[in-house]
Image (cartoon, rainbow, N blue to C red; front, side, top):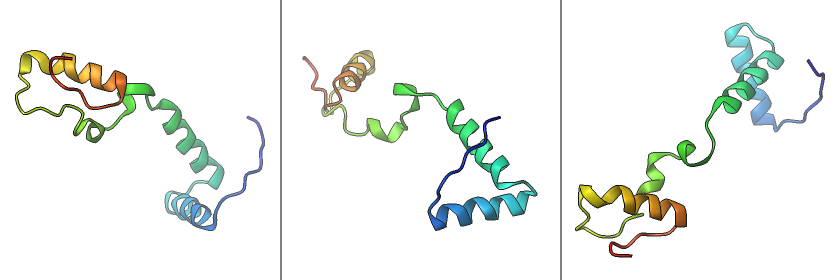
Length: 85
C-alpha cells in the first residue's frame, strides 16, 4: 500500500467518518472500499444510466425493427436521431 494524505470537504469527512464508525472500520478502509467500487464500475456507454436515452429518438413512428439502429446512431452522435437519416 501507498501512504497518502488527502483533503476532504467537511461534509465528505463527516460522511466517511460516520460510515466508518457505523461499520467498525477505519476511515482509510472505507475510502479504499469506495475507490474499489468506483474502479469496478464499467466506463463508456455501458456506464450510462438508462435515463440518458430519453429523447434520443424523436419520432413516434419508430418500430422495433429499427429502434436498435436509430438508438446506436443517436448514442454515437450524442444528438437526437430522426428516422430515415
